[in-house]
Amino acid sequence: MTAHKVGSILRRDAPTLTPLTPIRTAVSVLVEAQADGAAVLGEGGDLQGILTQKDCFRPALHAAYYQKWTGVVGHQMTRDVVTVDIHDEVIEAADMFLNHPHRLFPVMDGPRVAGLLYRLDVLALLARLG
Image (cartoon, rainbow, N blue to C red; front, side):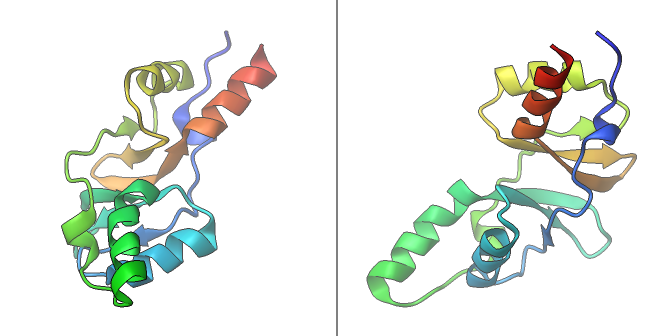
């Protein structure tokens, strides 16, 4: 297999959030962007966590029942984030998707988030190469 780097297929235009973003706003961002999740960044741009569609279900269900949205991203996000490096080979990332239930991984370029790597994009590349 030809070596393909994660940086060649990551989504650089993926939405980002902050821990203080209201959860209702975050849900709107994900829905409008048709995104599976978003990196959560601190004031200095450092990765604080990730918020996925699944993380949003409990507050959305609560809001549907009580007719009121409450909370912020920091209360719902996953803090223990699995990441990949922009220079990793796609085959390594494919193996990570086999071993983790996640649909996406934040892609790091040194200390900053370069974008998101979607499981679907890895699968599409593997299908083209196969």
